[in-house]
Length: 70
Image (cartoon, rainbow, N blue to C red; front, side):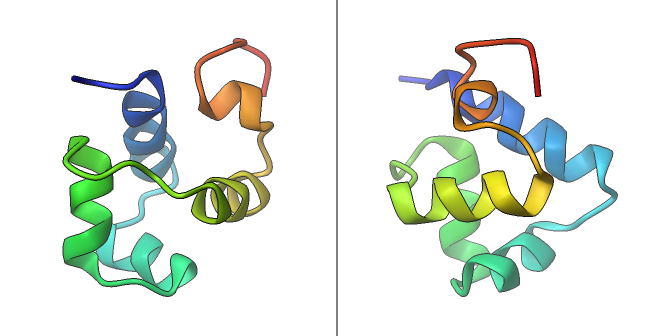
């Protein structure tokens, strides 16, 4: 099952010209685990959600697909 945040996570990463490994470093996790989040194989933990929101300077509602406003 694909969650709404998966496309936004990938789009934000690609729009920032970052690799999965780059984002994994920000989250202090492995590239393999980050790839699993981006594929939807593992749910994104809330602490990682908050870190990504801070990093990309977007709201949690935006990242979760609940609003179009960043």
